[in-house]
Image (cartoon, rainbow, N blue to C red; front, side, top):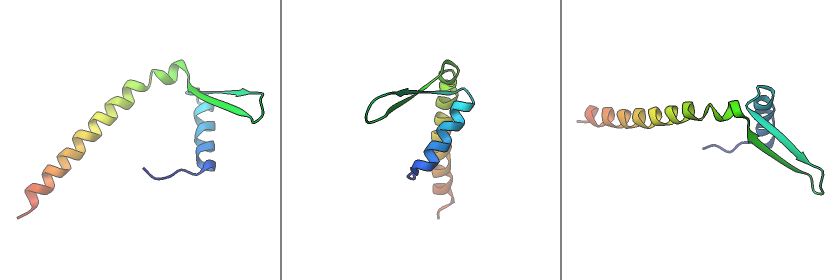
Length: 72
């Protein structure tokens, strides 16, 4: 997986918060501590992610098999 910059991560987290999928909790401590977690509706998306992962694995296997068949 490619590395993500701090700026990119920050933008993605803000977008997820704005869309109600992630919540941010900030603790008033030194150093500052921040935690992110899925909201209830965000957790409901988990089966969709699992289904996409399963399909992706099957598709990768399909592509490998297709390439084998194409080789002489």
